[in-house]
Image (cartoon, rainbow, N blue to C red):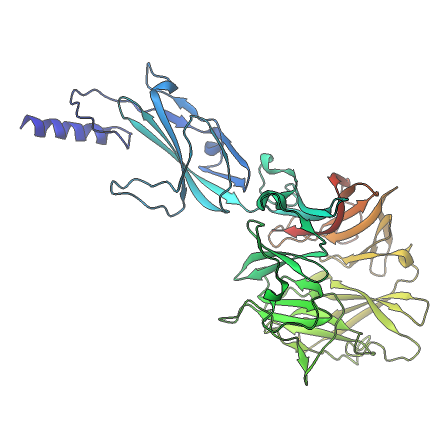
Amino acid sequence: MKNKIRHLLFLSVILFSVASCIDDKGNYDYMEIEDAIVEIPEVKENGGKISRDRYDELSLNPEIQYQAGSSADDYNFEWGLYTQQPQKDDDDAYIPKKIIGDKPQLSYKLIDEPDKYYVVLKVTHKEMGSCTDYKFELNVNSMAGWLIYDEAASGDGDFQIIRDREIVPDLSSIQTGIVRNYFATANGGKKLRDGKFLGRRNMNNQYDHLYLFKEDGMYKMKAGTYEVITEDYSTLFSTQPAKNAPMALYYPSPMYGQVEVFVNNNEMYTIRWNMLGQEDKYTTPIGAWGTAYKVNPFIAPVPVTGNTVRAVLYNDISNAKGQFITINSSGAAGFPMTPEGKFNTGAINTNETMKLKLEYLGQGRDGITCALFKDELNAGKLSLYTADLRDVSKPLALEIYDLSDLQNIDDAKYFTFGTRGDVLFYATTSKVYSYVFNGAVTELLSTSGEEIVSMKLYTHSANEDYSGRMLFVATYDGAAGKVYKIKFNELNGQLDGEVEEYTGFGRIIDMMNKE
């Protein structure tokens, strides 16, 4: 009877105590036990959640109040990492996915897959067995930011990632800066070679794959970890192309639909990801009567909803008159004809005294398609044609702008369009300009001793503050690369604040935003 009473008293002590893991050592001379009190300021300040990037060092120094007369030497410490839906043992206790520390302070490199986890610090008194569990949520993030592929003089390439709150929303202060050589970090020291342009693939409303395309091949990587999946270009196709020559990839945001468009050797391929059971491969080029259409190596996204146009391409390679080609949400090609508008979108060269060849094709304001043409019969005169091709049943040829008098336009090598205003950005080897359609030209940047090698517009599917309002310009001085971040007014193209510089790169080959 006494034993039963003692066991009932023992149970009462457990229920009364905050502790969740007191061990029964067979000693029934009882006293009230106080648990250690644990707090981590960063966790408390963030409502029980913290966020880190993969490969970051998770360093935490808890504030621990031990039992009276005790010190850290009287305790055992265990840091456990659990998945968000952890398993439990027979005593309903969480089973750690991994033990990541056994000291009061934690220092652990997050080599784990990007995901949502729980971290539990268990503080156990060595003699008394009293135990405190301190639990919080940990998000291990994929490395997002302004992704740069650059190459050293040796030809070895890697990824450098620029990160601040204007590029990646909700970054903590410890997550900002430039992350160096991230590909090598993720792939055991391996380096990239002979990269041409970057791309990513959208599948099931997520960015699943990251690509670095070469002249005749690719590196295919996991978008979350940057780890190489394959370097076999043939795995992209179920029917192999006659020539391996990747040129352009349209990777739609998860906000805008599920049709992917790819250009290889001037031929169009599509994958309709929203079709049930769609295979993760390109089949045959889009064509008619057994002949594939030839297109220029540009794809202009059209970010709209509904069963309408998703992307626009252009053909003046196999069609002397020139024609715009649209890709709808089913992955099918269309050929808009607008003979009654400012021009005919299905036959640009209707006059024998002109020969317009595409210089650049891109997305403008509200999904408008913008095309730059050089007239080969008229001293390379440059013109801007704009068209609204969003509705496949009502294509509109909008305006033609004569650009021949724009400052240094004949020396321009790089182009892009604003997506929130009618603005063209163009760059020579040393200067960057903005041009408001039918308006003023503004010089945004002038470099000395540095050659401009790339210019890209920043876009982000969930960053309303800065998406479409920043320009990134890469330069090279023969030994080192540099990146300029230019914020601008989306309506007039003029500077908004100071130009920022990032240094410490090799020769930059391509850049893009990595969400």
